[in-house]
Length: 193
Image 1: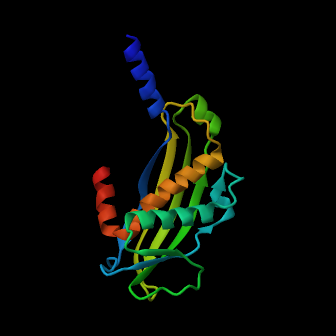
Image 2: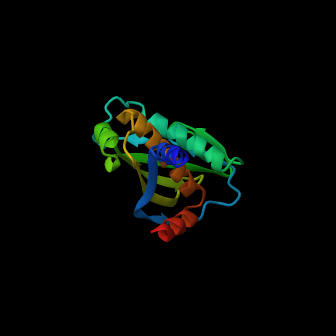
Image 3: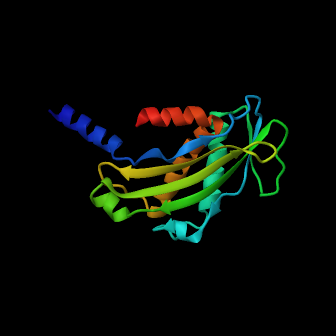
């Protein structure tokens, strides 16, 4: 009996971590596929309007956190691409693409609700509009992707800012998958619904 209790407690501790899920808020628009010979991606600075940030006022570096997380996610998912952070005027190299993003919603949720109740209460949410552009600036694909981080069993002790950072990293992983192959990403999300 003690062995079963220990196993159950261990399982609960593993499950007590926060979980992130992503969804497409708007359908994907694909004008053309990402060129198969792409070797570089230039990530333009993300836009964040002040009204988009809620319940995480201490998170003043959200655009930089998202941009670095996106670069890291692209390097992990597509190591053959040179992924760089750039300013708005940076030149896209030959066989390269550019990515523009706008963080349209960052809501830290409620740390107290995540801790005491769990489930879906107090969830941190973020959403990004992303556009993939060819070397000349023509739009290849666009989407709006949202991510929600919940604590299914409660007992989450992270601050809103820490939870938002985790949420933005997870959103960046999803965004990288979209950038690499927008049409395949759309099919996967439609199949998941």
